[in-house]
Each structure stands twice: as C-alpha cells, then as structure tokens.
Picture 1 (cartoon, helix red, strand yellow):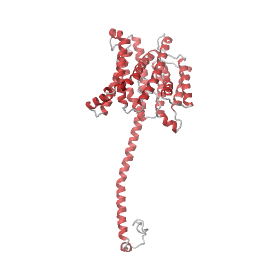
Picture 2: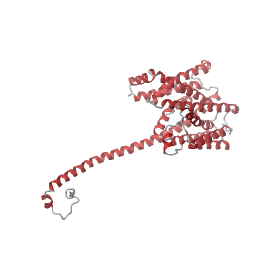
Picture 3: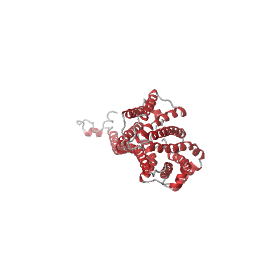
Picture 4: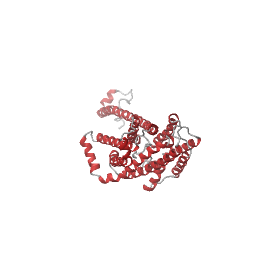
Length: 402
C-alpha cells in the first residue's frame, strides 16, 4: 500500500528505475500516477474558475459598497436639499406675493411618484405594456380590498405633506429638521401599541432625551434673520404643524408595516396601490381647500423652476430611500439623518442668516445623541429583532417604510 501511494516526485533518487518498472506493482503505480496527474490537471482547470468566482464576488462587493455610500450621499442631499429648497421657495414666494398653492404641489408630487412606481413595475415586468397591465389588473383592479386598506395611510400621508409645507412656511429649516425627529418617538409609541413591540430601557431613555431635546429647541427662539417680523405667531403655527406631521408619520408608517407583514406583493406595487387613493385624496384637497383660489389665480400660479425642483426631489426621494434600505445598514442611515441636520444648520446660517443660540445647540445635540442611542445595536438577539423595526427616513414626508 505504501509503495502504490508513492508518486515519482517523492520516490528516492537512488532507487533504480528498471526495478520500479519491472516490479508487479509497477502497472498499478503507473495507473495511479496517471490518475493523479489527471486529477491534478482537473484541479488546475477548476482553479481559474474559483479565482474568477472570487474576483466576481470581490467586484460585486466593491459595487455594493459604491452603491451604498452613493445612495447615502444622495439621501443626505435629498434630506437637506428638499427642506432648504422648500423653505426658500415658500419664503421667496411670500415676499413676491406670488406664493404657489401647497396642495397643488402635493398633488403633483403624488402623481409623479405614482408614475415612477409604474415605471419600475414596467421594468420588472419585462419592459412590456402587457406585463404592466397584467400586474396592475391583478394587484389593483382585482384586489379592491387591499387598495381600501391602504386608504388610511394614503390619507395620512397626504395630510402630512400639506402639514410639512405649512411648517416650512412658518419655521426655519434648522428648527424644522430637529423638531421633525419626533417622528422617531411617535413611531416607537405606535409600534408598542399596534405591533406589541417591546423596547429596552436604553431605547426608552433615548426617546426621553429626544423629547427633551426637541422641547429645548422649540423654546430656543432661534429664527431666520430674514423671517418676517410676525415670526412669533408664525412660529407657533409651524411648530404645531410639524408636531402633527410627526404624529401622522409615526402612525402611517407603523400601519403600513403591519399591512406589509406576511404580504408577497412587491413594495412598488404596494406604492401603486397606495398612490391611487393618495392622488384622489390630494385632488379632493385641492378642490375643497383651495378651489376658489385656483379659479382666481390658476392651478400653476407661482410655479417656477425652483418649485418644480422641490416637487421632483420629493417624488424621487422614495427611490433613494429604497436603495438605501437595500444596501445600507441602520447605523449609516441614522448617520445620514444626523449629518443632514448639521448640514441644514450650517447652510441655513449662510443662506437664511440663521443664528442659533446656545439653547438651540444644546437641544440639537440631545436630539442627535438620542437618534444614535435609539439606533445602536444591543447584542445578537436584539440585532435580529431590530431588522423589523421602523425608523422613518424621509424628511420631506410621504415616504413609505421599506
């Protein structure tokens, strides 16, 4: 057995070759050598395939990392850009006396978002009209009960978007960004009530710190120097609007998550199911609330390239959020949220002549600290459960939880 397992590479050099070839075991040794060489050749052929697989996996990982950080950069840009542009458009429109009607912007945003979702479903269905029609007929026309269930978050998201326009008409961008983080608190409370979700003492402590931080910011009195002289009255309206928007964001997000559990319908089809009633509700809001003004001034009164940019950024934000949720972890998402608050404060200081006082800085620090505490992992078991938790990402409102 030992002789047959010895290959020519390991055989002693002093051994005569004729003895090896003339021995009875020589044929077995040759067959073994040939089979060994064949195996080595096959392994040599398989080795490049393994290398190619490793290289493709490495390239795929590099692409995923690139997509992850690019999407996070876009998310920060969307958060900061939407808030600042919305604030600037409302402020400049008010100064010129040609302020665009917020309800029309919400309607156009919902219609644009619905179109984007239909485009994604069209691509997923093989880029054919029949595939899109089949998907819409199956998940919309033949599923009226599913569409009816989504009327509740559709109504809340429409109200929320109108509230955000009202808030940014009366609040500076930095105060709005900080106060709107109360959506974390409302989401946690509704998750505990509707989903029976339990939170650790650390998370409850972070929610208390968050509430204190927002309360400090609200009482800081920091406003834009470019704001009107009636800022005290407008500030109260803005604070009430942003608090109500945080409540609608928390409830609608948790309700939407509860509907999604156990559902095999794709997210984009769910957004289409939600988009139909959202468009109808937004249009009814336009007619009921601003019908008289529209008949006088027109539907697109006050619209400019800046206003269209606001509508487009808000509608396209859902795509960015979807990419972030797929490729980035929760820590990076929270970092993006916190970083967007800081960037908004810095840009507001230059663009809107915003001068935060010490009270505002303390409150903002507490909000950032609470956001990081709430999202930090707490061990293996809690890390697995955290994957199902809801943490709103969209600052502009109306973003569906992915």
